[in-house]
Length: 426
Image (tube, rainbow, N blue to C red; front, side, top):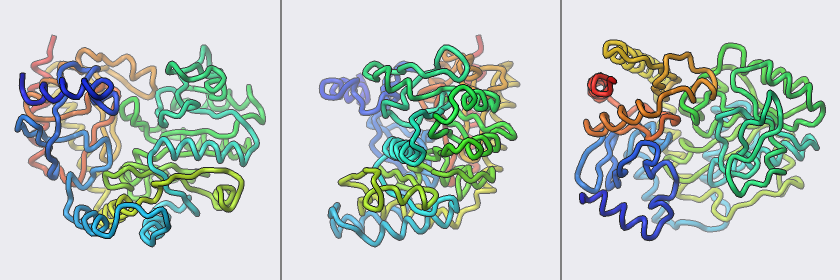
């Protein structure tokens, strides 16, 4: 039994499944997860002393790599002054100002502690503003583990959702309409079937939670037009894409202005941070200015705010166009390696994000993604892991490239993938 196996056995004695978030347990791919002891730049080091080129990236926030010097220095200064005060600090305002400068759709915002809190709060606000109850989400999109958002697709187009987890009351799920992503006709059908009842449409503008699926041309524009015409609130869940696919997030990249935006990941620099914000007339409904209640003891935590501010200040000097080109080139080389090995794959990509689907494609929706061979992904994952390259341990998660990945690092990953495609041939 190696060090990772010993640690996992001990963890299972105390933690549910040995982990604090399900995908880390490696149930989708099998085997034992590495227990990480250190992260530096694009590299992770486990308890057994193995080194991995990291494409998990903390599930999104580490565009600058692990332990970037400006962020570490900011955190050390903040911790030296105290860890939590329960009172306002100037750094909250500083970080809010940077976020607003990057996303013009956000006129006011509120910091919370996670993406789940952010989306839950944004939906509560949308319901209060519209005095409607129904929410439209897209099949395969994940917006956190709040009850109303853990709804699976119903039995037909634009019908009520069903609980996607035990413990979610059917009544909660029935307030959510789950429809296919990249399907403007389904959006129109939902509004026709439920006139003046839909409070909000919530969407990942670039999907990252069923693998990476960009919007097809015109889809986001159709969401904006439909919600505006029907008096519903358009919420962009940019917890994953905010400050990753562009400095101003996917909404800037695609030129769409939502009513509300949820953020997380990058704006915390690796610490637990979320935020929701948008039009001032909506945000003024939030307590203490308005009647919509939301609070959090650790919201605006000074250490997390310092980490986020240092991260965004560093990213403001980076070239996202170069990162987009790097991502596109890397994904093209992965496709070429698969083709040379005689493998059919589809690589979904956006700036700094990608997924290899073991399916000929195209992949434009959750239904398309589910055709991907999880068995082939499992073999590929372990072939990469044996070569010291760490991918997300699930076919349906985004992998991440950041500014810390060098050309040499990506060359290494491409060569490893070519060998993995050949090795996994069946």
